[in-house]
Length: 517
Image (cartoon, rainbow, N blue to C red; front, side):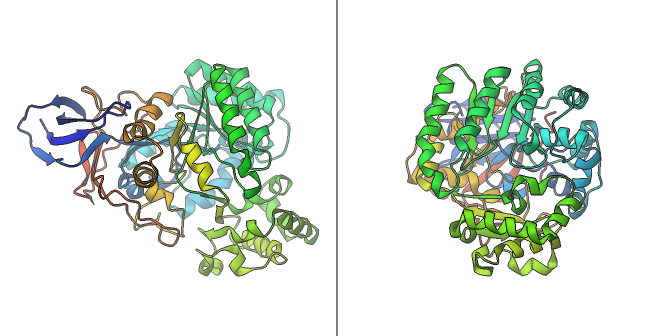
């Protein structure tokens, strides 16, 4: 054997009670589970430690950062061995026309050249040799943006056929489905009928439809109705991205939301969800603007933001959202050096409600719209209710980053370094929302099943050796909003395809992740 692990308390990922056993690995596979002892080139003493399948991040945004820095330190050090990308309507392919133009600044900031096709993207991924396994959906924003740009238009029959053909080409690779981001352009310009027509083709490849719904706040119930209608009309499994009730005025809706989903599931609709274990979200600052402002090209948007009458309308819009919105924003990832000193500050610390519109418009203009914000608008009680649902999995909603290099910039959400240890320590060990075996199932075999990831997510002979070994007394997230690049504690060993990527809590530099496409 190449690697032998002794005396581990094993959680198999299927929700079964744990058992003590030794485990043997040869090549990239688990070849032995039992009480016997064998000679191996490397031996790990796992006494008093917990062994589980590698964690699966069901909602990641590493489409571009993983090419720029394939070490993915923030992910691997919290036990993630596989991540699912292409979420919220944005993926690494296809990229043509106006969609590609919109990506230029981001690609340039990461030191990347552009590409067009899925095949080109896969080749780049394989050349990069990521530290973790890479899986992806196809972003509907890529499809619509590549065909008709960022215009608020109803698709012609010809455009719809072109989009469907483009999706068919990409389905020939093992993409896991299609994602939408219905609060972001160009996805927000698509209507329900259009989405149904495109999504129904996923049934031919057993694909899943993952959606950042049209609303997570004021119009939340309508957004869920649309999502369930799409599932019913297409007979395609639906996955709700980062399920939440955003904004204090919407917290009361949680029971109605969960009952609505429960009823749909009871009626045979396949619907699941993911969530990160925090009550703050992160998105682009321009996502908070009315949809008519983000119609068209980047230049079109910037010109509108310069217009005095537009600023008056934005000011009214911000005042309607109230002081709570203003004080709950944290500026992060600001691209312009002029505003670099603002990173990590709440918007309410910088301007008052009256001045907010002008400040936000100037900030977006100066940064070419590349401003991120962290919004503190969710309820802890609701988060616990969501995490407790048997169909909810865990996703970081974050890109892979490292503690140094080109991806260490700004003050991103700490979920990129802390989500999985935080889920286990805070919500399983401290809050007792569920048994540990149930929690491990949520982050291993359940996402493997839902996203059709073969021979991963379970500790079983013949399965790929993606394994996490952690100390239950030490596991803890250390990333904060002030210091988001802090590596978690307690993750002692991480094994990816049979190779040790984390040894006694330290990175080994091994990058044995596979592109599962």
